[in-house]
Amino acid sequence: MDDHVRRRPGEVNFQDGNTEVAWTRFKQKFEMYLIGMGKEDAAPKVKWALMMREEGDKALEVYNFFKAKLVTYKKNEAGEDVIDEDNSQNYDKVIEHFHQYSSER
Image (tube, rainbow, N blue to C red; front, side, top):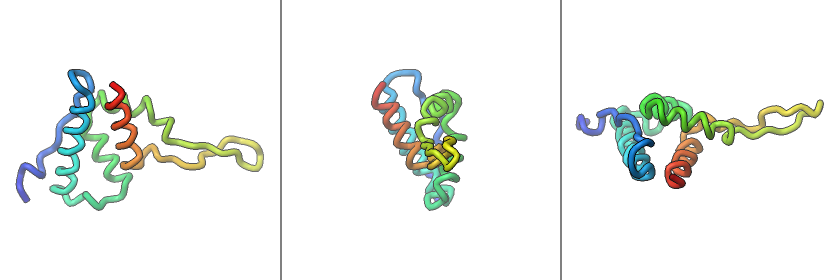
């Protein structure tokens, strides 16, 4: 496979300039990286882990900011809050939140 496709995407730059353009560019490069590594059909949690490792510290800060929004709770029989659905490591759901974050900046 072409080295361009296997090249690591580098960190996403949420600090300088247009964050939506930076995010879109990172996402395109990351999707090519997944294909180059044979991971395009990996489980959502695997793709999430690969993406989070590549994005860099600023993106991790952004993720930690919205991570709680990806978890929903319900009451159990004792009236306690328990996790109903945890999408905090779901690649597609996390991608949606990064896109929303970058388009609002």
